Length: 218
Image (tube, rainbow, N blue to C red; front, side, top):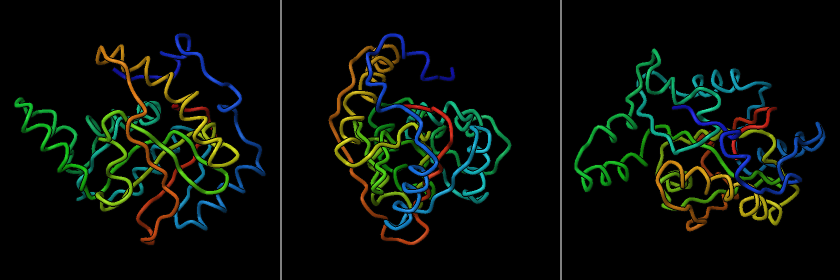
């Protein structure tokens, strides 16, 4: 079942000031600083265009894994990955077809080294850094090194002033919403247990950030 931010918004108290859309000037500054830090950046207007942008990044013979992301649900990527007309090796499907818990866990770890790992992010600093956190680390583990290539999709509502504001957004927007989702999906609370600050990409062309001019994800 596709998950939307609106499914949890009524049950979570968030800091709305850290979930606003940026001005055009603020978006331009963000793109400039992300590119200066080694990230490839694409800016698109709609969720549909974001899906096209992600599809365009991934060659037909690639192995593909995702980290759980409401944004990916909202742009239709998860439906496309699982049911779409593509020739990718779908590591997500392979992993979750495994019945044995230990074997499935090992396969999830191995899938971090996919040719293309697609996911979201919790905050984008205008100064050019990306911030995210997981309870388990199964999403952010691929970003800094393990995956061959990384495609990160984010609504521009996640753009904040600086790194301090990005940490604030993680705690006061992303965590409350993810906590509600985790309780519904898994019956346990989430936690800001493993945190990533992605300051620079040193391998040219490895990490692409797709920024969508919509309020998406958390």
